Length: 398
Image (cartoon, rainbow, N blue to C red):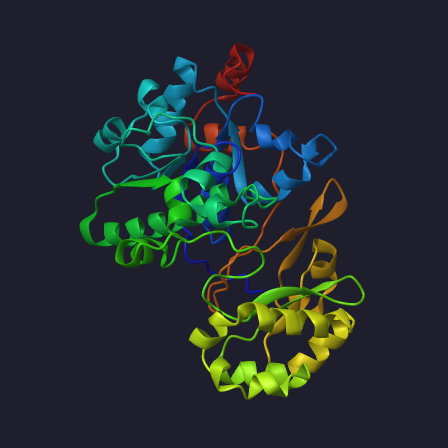
């Protein structure tokens, strides 16, 4: 990977968020070259203790905190807020994901900062956005995935909606926030002015809904959960094979469908005029899926994949993380980076998208709480060793 200039180098970001949506925004920006100063409470971001913990810090944080400078400041203290304001005076971007109103209560709201630093881009992430009747409601990803429409369509018909085993709303919101920040940076090059980027978790989910809104408004159709299929596109489904593994087959193109059914031993379906286009196949979805399920049940997953790939039919396995790490395509695409933590190697995921000329990179894993206090508070703000010691004694910094 190139060690050259990355697209966001020279951009200074102050990250005040905790847990996931705000911090992952900072991770994306830092990966592509921004100087990200993560302001944590003296006890550290709670995510440092979540899930699998090794040597006192979660393995998750080693990935999430990469390339960031950790500074501890107690935002509930007057001195902590004053130092945060000083950091923001020379910053390009602020990322925060506290509940709406918290920053204003601390004297760190957009109007205060705009007066001090008119070029500041103020990115705010919350459950329901900064305005509207739900703005002050607690909004974790799990709740907003339901309010945003995703959970309604995810699962089996007639059953309780299913949650994917990741914080989808948080991660999507971080991607939206990073996009909004990039757009605001481009606009600032023209006007010189910063602006607020208002990202709501539920709206990031809402942005995924494709044709659901116009289909409801124009045809009165409410998209329902459809299990392993997708409504109105046939065949695209998951099938169990003889070895107990599953494969995903996407045979919904007209010519692809013919090749698929020939390989599956159903030339009669391949040549049936009633199944020649998607509209006809939707009417006969159950029969098509039954034929493909019966064929897959007689073969190992690898055999199904081999035969369909030879016929140029989109097909693939369902991977666990162990499968991903072992797969040569993942490795060839550089999707795993190895960092060293306390002398031990650790794989962490690369951050996408892939840029040919100015790629991102991991320079260091997430470090100890307050590990950059002296560099940032002493170097940027000019605090002396005595002043830093006093702040430690007062509990303002770790």
